[in-house]
Amino acid sequence: MTNSNGKTMIDLTIRLETPADHPLVSQINEAAFEQKDEAQLIVALREEGALRLSLIAILEGQLVGHIMFSDLPITRDDLIVDGVALAPMAVLPEYQNKGIGSALVREGIEICQILGVEAIVVLGHPKFYPRFGFAPKLAALLTSPFKEVGNAFMALELKEKTLSQGGQVHYAKAFAI
Ligand SMILES: CC(C)(COP(=O)(O)OP(=O)(O)OC[C@H]1O[C@@H](n2cnc3c(N)ncnc32)[C@H](O)[C@@H]1OP(=O)(O)O)[C@@H](O)C(=O)NCCC(=O)NCCS
Image 1: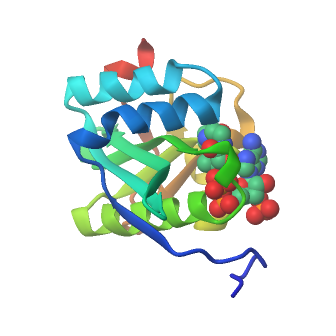
Image 2: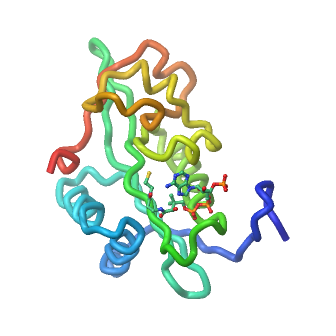
């Protein structure tokens, strides 16, 4: 069976991360990014209490992918939009391009919607995230710490028009480390 991208569909389980998964989540991120920075960011986000949602993907009993969302209030005048940052996400190199990353993003968006999150922001691959509705144009309305990142800074509204008048994004402290 193939999905709309013509990729082979696989029998994948996606569930919430538990403390027992922490060492493997670190390993996946280190393997995918070929450095320790993202694994360290994950630990710092947990310690800061900024973690909103962390999901893992399991294939044939093996943990193969991970995605994390953390608190990202977006302020405008007296208004606070309940936003989250999607970061990091990783799939083990030997399991990439099989639809696992896409499944994690889709499940993450769905759960964020259930949690009442109003907007998701991501700094990432400009060719990957737009397929889920993330748009650089929407993110361009926001004031962020990023300069000259072009289309890599993207946003998705889960509540209509929540970002249309812009706002200032506030990343968790862990991102500054
Ligand atoms: C990005 C990542 C999570 C995607 O996971 P995945 O399981 O391979 O994703 P899927 O199979 O669902 O989709 C693959 C698509 O992502 C694209 N993609 C993967 N890495 C990409 C990159 N560095 N730049 C642009 N597109 C990328 C592929 O080209 C493919 O596009 P296509 O469907 O048009 O062919 C995975 O490649 C990864 O872990 N990369 C290393 C870590 C990383 O870059 N994390 C994201 C930071 S924003």
